[in-house]
Image (cartoon, rainbow, N blue to C red; front, side, top):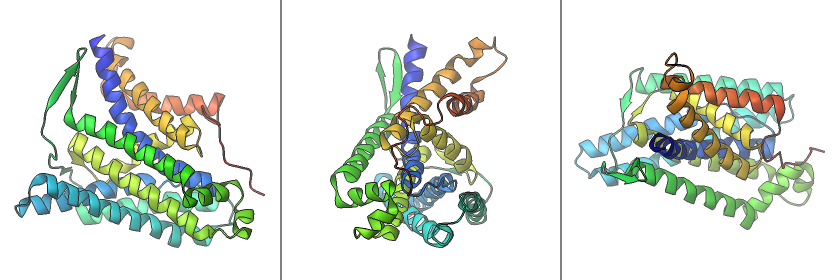
Length: 307
């Protein structure tokens, strides 16, 4: 039972990160019908920018907590700029093209961002400075740290804020109208270009926060870290129902828990043949099963058919 509860805690933390990244996928898909495969690289760049800014300010004598906050702000602004640039330069000119064209472009932009990060930060792993005290707590035999608590609470706050934005503001109403029928929304006065850009910018801001969370949790970053993280977040979005905000959140949490439980028990299930480092098997097995038996995801897809 202690192992089970511990893996549930680990899964909630990891799932919270997956959920934040998955929201970026599902927002863009819900509005444009596009899978932005460069989104994982936006997370990676957010992490590396935060490491650079935080490390530089901390080395200059600034308290680590304030330096980390500055790193988070710069990371968010940088990722928002990247998200806006991706939409404006890479995707907007292809709007109306066959669906395969922007998909290939998204993969190409992922490779471009990954290589750009390799040029700027090098091939070696970067160490993320600890932003919070390494305090450990215990509940019912499960141990968790202050960093894990902050990750779960901050993720919940940001997901709640996004839901309120989408369902309680004029911008959210414009997003939902564009997702339902962009042609009619445009006739009713909605600036389609501005709404789509806002979706990319908001999703990229969430990606930056998720990147700082990953860096704080694992305390390392690498120019290739966004690839697998992006695939897992995409799996979470598909699991919950891509195009559905609540589905992306639930899918991220479920995927994190499934992966953590799999990592905790895979040794017992295989008689010690496989270790916990094979946990990725469970994430992609979930993707295959969902695509085979329920391709619309647990919550279905709530975007309207394009006219």
